[in-house]
Length: 255
Image (cartoon, rainbow, N blue to C red; front, side, top):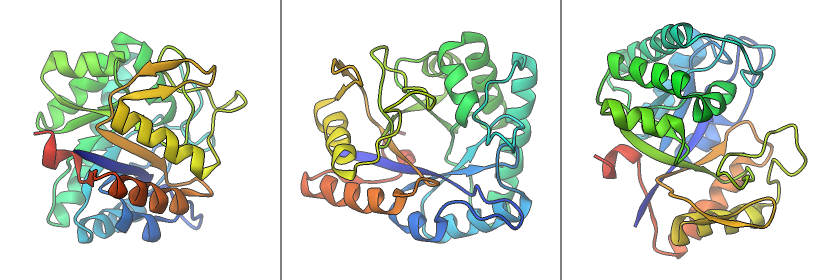
């Protein structure tokens, strides 16, 4: 059994440092790199691409809404046409940095509000899938299983990776608990590991309500800006290894 371990990285901006990229990158197999809209800047993008490429992990674009102040987590009224343009712009920029470093992108994972809105909005999901396809039809789209994002990607012919979250709780419809609600974030590493093992080995997750629902897990996300990101990654890797699960970039076993 194989599973990908990804983290949202490259989210520093100018003189501001966010996350522990140097420590986390060697421990994950795929990096979702901010593209300058919700976080990051050209210099940070270049630096993060280089570090990820050196560690031979999958390179991914992490496009979001143009909302530095809100870190891309605030809902925005953006048309599918504009979302398409935003995604093409950001993925294209990161692809250029990847090429300059001697590599290429493996995947795209929308960020924050864009990711969550597209999960339920078919028009937004289709705009994102089309944008990714038009930039490079060989890219993998990371999205939550069973969502409009997965449906749109599969319809257009994109390869998908069903993404689950180590440090977020779930609602009964399979979506993530909104960050504004109590219990949205899992801060206890033992609880996080138990959730990961259940999703990967048993294909099930226990929702915040206590209900158990089925779930598919191709890639596990640990947020790189979390206070326990490094600890979570270390313990999750160890727990999976003990169960005989191999950690590998999504592109190495999904194609």
